[in-house]
Length: 153
Image (cartoon, rainbow, N blue to C red; front, side, top):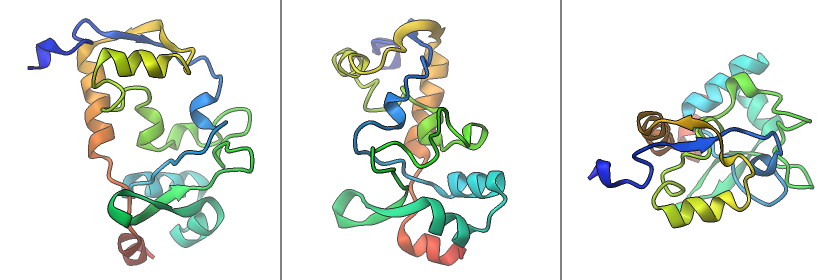
């Protein structure tokens, strides 16, 4: 039941702009159709042009590949440059952090993630409803598979 979730009274989080979630170690920022369209609009680029410049194919569940942002050699997101260069159009995966479903699954996981993120358990109190909204957005934001991208080009 929802009222039994450990964050029923909310959770504190305020981004400290440390960029840990934007780089430093290998990872994937998967792009949904909404993400791709927002980023293309923001950068005033066509889909193929944007993909050629900023994207790669990343392994996903069950051997499929999905569209993801490239990383720099130091593992920073390709859109990171002393801050997110596309902050207003950032992908849902980025805008819902740290309220990803697996991160808020239980308090133990939340606290493990908080060990790497100086903004977790600090700052603004996010309400249960806000956390649930972000968790749902994260879950519903499905990355684009190769055939879906080909249909858009």
